[in-house]
Length: 126
Image (cartoon, rainbow, N blue to C red; front, side):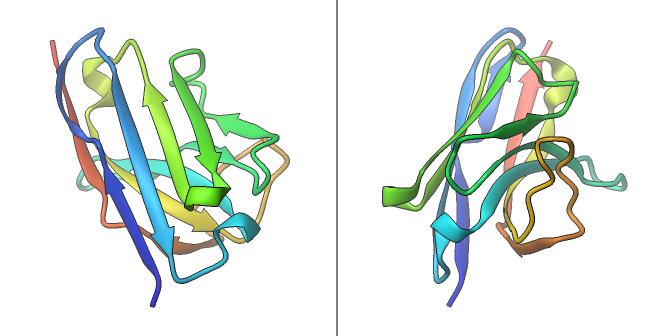
């Protein structure tokens, strides 16, 4: 049974930091590109950051470059997103996903995502 479980969301002041974690089971974690997506209700989901199966290459959306860092620990089947210098516009529900494709660090689309977590809410107050 596939499980993808996010944690670490919460309420933080602008300029603060949060670290999201995602623990996966039920599939070969180290075979998949892993990614973080975010969404405001009623709008399309945005690919925030993705990381290749080995951890050796990453993608970041322009809106988070220089502030967010994605990493993974394949031994622990865990994905992380360190979010620094948070802004009110980062307030979204954040989803962890396992993607069957790697787009060479140029994109992080949801079209090839195989597994999704339930999401964790991040709220940044001004």
